Amino acid sequence: MACRSACCCGFGPVNEDNARFLMLALLIVLYLLCGAAVFSALEHPKEKQAKEKWAQRFEHFSNKHNLSKDDLEKFLRFYEEANVAGIRVDTIRPRWDFTGAFYFVGTVVSTIGFGMTTPATIGGKIFLIFYGLIGCAATILFFNLFLERLITVLAFVLKSCYELQRRRKGVLPHDQDSRRDSSQGNRESLAGWKPSVYYVMVILCMAAVIVSCCASAMYSAIEGWSYFDSLYFCFVAFSTIGFGDLVSSQQLRYESQAAYRLGNFLFILMGVCCIYSLFNVISIIIKQILNWILKRLEFPCRCRCCPGKSLRPRRNAVMPGHFRTRRNISIETDIANESDTDGRKMSGEMISMKDFLAANKVSLAIMQKQLSETANGHPRQSGSCSKHNGFSGGVGALGIMNNRLVETSVDR
Image (cartoon, rainbow, N blue to C red; front, side, top):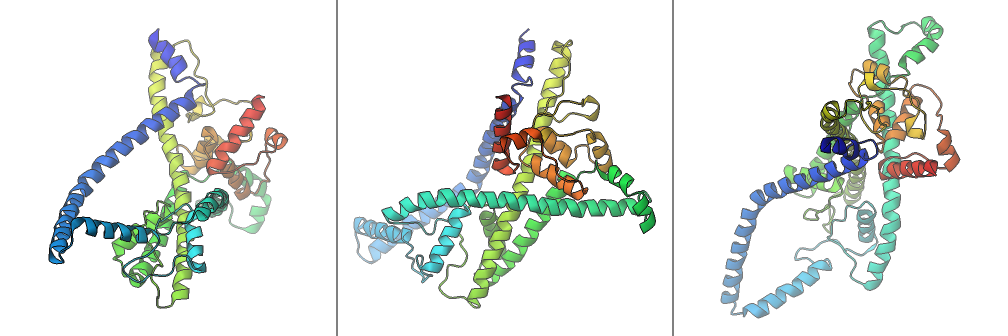
């Protein structure tokens, strides 16, 4: 009886999103614990060594120059305050001239936030709050729109390669007359094709690696960093982590300074867009893994404890093809799954990209439906609920919010 209750209430259709959320939270906590253990093992000995070395130098300097430790500590605190204001021992570029301020606002709206420049006045801090609120939101929207267009291009390229492969195998005709006569049939045969999420992930990963390697070559040559440190900086900057231990374009003078600053801007822009897109695609695969784990936890319990309970497919679950049934269309992400099984067979993947996204309401669902229809030459047909309520599709956090708004308005 207890097992029946847990099966029907804990992992039932109503609470599946909650179960996925809790499982993801547990996995993230476990991931954080493992990461903390690894970094502590790697970095803590170096930290202890640096503290001991600094204590020795501090003692030696105070004795050599006959300074009291209190006076020396006060002086070092003054330097720390100056360091926050952007003053360094080495000569660096001005932080708050127009070009320095432009670099600062770029790190703000991109959420990189290196931390080497921060506002010191009350007016600057207040302005930053409102400026960042609007700027960060607009930049996230730009990344979402960039992602839509990027994957649309990838879908078109992958579809063209797929058509070429089928022509080489003799599935599609080569001559123009035969193509014209059978164009409608070919369109129908390709209508169920969907680009694989794994192919998209590999392409985005390769693009991010290429951009990072090219940018690292530039940084190592101009900034004087090692190539590994340059790669490290690229990941920290492109992923918007932004530690600030390494920051590009901070020296007062460079050779070909204008060209370098332009290249720095373009590399950071391309890198952030590629890594943002890659993170979105990886999140899809993580959600697929979570759904698989939930299915493994759920099906055995239902078979043993709930023999009379029908295996009703749910909108959020990744279901095998023979478990899928036709269901009513409620929102735009649930439109027309008749060709899902054929799409998996034609794409060569167990779960194709569009199949997975539409079945799981992930953030790229609406975008993936649009790009598949565009690639197949079909006009977009939005769901009636979406038109009625005025909610448009999106990706990332924007797509999740829109889907939830649509569902809430439909329920009402």
